[in-house]
Length: 320
Image: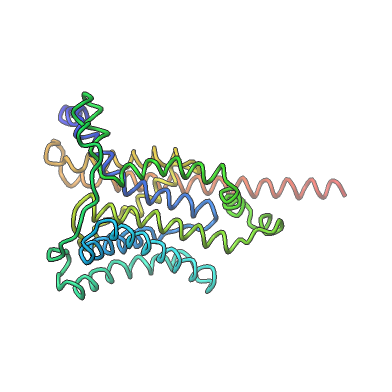
């Protein structure tokens, strides 16, 4: 136990927490946007994987990390668009469609990596680029706090700025109001002239862009290459983080940091005097707990909604 306390007391550990939180936070914000519009995006994992692959390939081809980032964002948006087309136009089950996209990403990225580079499983022959780190000169200026908050990849700062941008978008703009209206009661939204399909399309594309940023961070910030299934379930962890965070971007950020803490602790397995297998399980145990909380909350919401409908029906009969 003392070794865990020693690790938590270091600035390196908290730097690691923020670093590993970044891709989870991007995807969790994407889940928040789509869920607020009443369409859950289970394909976050696949979007991140495709975007991580695109970032590496395009940054290597064009010798530019920024073009790689742009490609990752576009690919993320396209995956969101595909899910929207399948679910909203073709009326397929959105969960099954998303699972299919995730499976396609797991195999498709490995296949395309072999096609473009002859590499098997990891992009060792591609000379890809990495996005820059910011404020590296300030890390030593402030004791303890400086090494924690300075010197991160540029996308880490973007992720935390997007928390407040998402809050402003959802609660202070007409578009955000329409999005939440569709998610809360799409019949009522339709009755006042809001195009439900258009809003849900936009929500899934925005969600894909967020996941794309998370994927770009994985291959052009967290590491400098692409490898098979490198997202390692972070898209699903993000869904749990969103579930625990509720409808608030701030709550989603706090929940993402919670999962980041668990993941960072797992990275220190060699220094913790508990079995390594147990330490590796920690992030996924937290994910299961998060999903249980989400399921319980959903059931409570359904029960509350049914109770309100029953009360409304009783009141209506009494009035007659």
